[in-house]
Amino acid sequence: SVREIARRGADIERVVLARAVEAHCDDRVLLDDTTTIVF
Image (cartoon, rainbow, N blue to C red; front, side, top):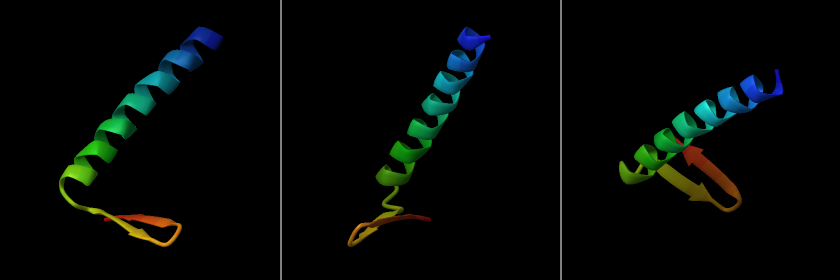
């Protein structure tokens, strides 16, 4: 159903945001002109 897809999308978004914040705090994000590199 549409609700289930929205819920799953929100769950995935929450996990991805947490990983992005963690990478940023660990200084694993580099900017190269218009490209973002995460390692």
